[in-house]
Image: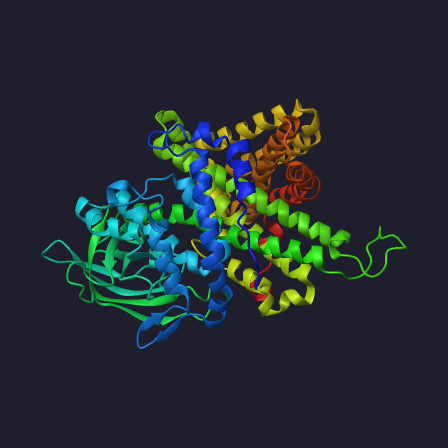
Length: 593
């Protein structure tokens, strides 16, 4: 079974030295008492909970999976106890509004805790993560009556939440949804239809499950403009009576087997409108956008534990002789000395720690967007989050797949053996590029919508920020080479961005679509380059100030050097593919495949 130690030192370095939490977040309205010492104490408790309670149920839960019997789902042994302890310790209420029973702590802190939980068990973390998304949608769009009915129970973890969008006929194409909502005299609605792929759609962890269901009103416009969002509980509040929601089956999946992925039938279930009529997409995207950042964090959790165990194994496993082994040295060498293994471990470290820096910076932007007194700063944070959300979701989840793949490779044949847990991590991580909108859909959203936000000014502000970072690095002798590498990659990103915006404005949509996924990866690599330049500078400056954490800080600087030399150059190939066009892709006829 894999072992895990929460990356507290790395998180502290990012919050204290790289992103300056105390001055950026600790001064916001309502967070004055939430200093770095408080944050680190909470994270230390989260680490203890995950390591002692969540991690031990992960591999057994994958073995057993969820049981569907007589229309009900039973989670694997240990999950009910772990969830009860999670709820009783207040983790579900961490970032919720005190008005509804929450602790009112920063959203950024909640996301870091979510990473730790995902390292312990992605499946377990999904139940709580979905409830947080439902909470945010209700908070943003619910009537006062809906808020008072549902938010305290969601915050307390007594009830869970889901997001019910997908139907068998439409898949990711929400314009094809057929679920119907018929108004009734008391102001509620009768919701009827079938939804598939509903994470946490049924389980035995909570007293009730609150489904947020996309459905179509009578005479609603066609397409997504005619969708509305409804709150449909499994059991009716107050009476506890069943509400016409039935679980038809659960999927037998490649990974996240302890998370129940259900088919749900709504048969004239009583629901209440959330937001405006035909405004379902706006309300749902409140949940989806936060969920997309959350699942990026979730995939990083799997990558982190994979890296930790691959590193530990490489330090202990002896096989072959490394190129620099002394002739007098007896026996085989530790495999961490082999160049190919070192490349794998360094790439794992670079992607894991770079991904963490990317998401924490965006997590802090969530707090700035919510609490900063300056409207201009709030708008800047909101625009940046909108731009980066598809990049975070897709790029970080793709990185997690690379990391968990390399983790298996470092273990060799033992990585393929279930009991060692490495292949399990890859199987779990594989879902993230698929759900919450596939990564290809995220890439299309990026090139067709996000890089054009505010007529491209949001993108330019972000790229200009990276330019400033490069300029500062150029004046730092120890960082000049790294800054130069980032400058070259940034120039490629600028050129690709201009090209795609020009093609899009000219109606050349095939070329834009053909370049979308490559462009998103190019964007992600450059963004991570910015994160690594910032980390390298913080590590260097901390060393110069006389820190005794020499190994940790030198490791940061040398990993940054590896990233700029061995990972970032991929941007050149991506740029070539982006500018090649779509001729070779579209020339072949369907019959010729």
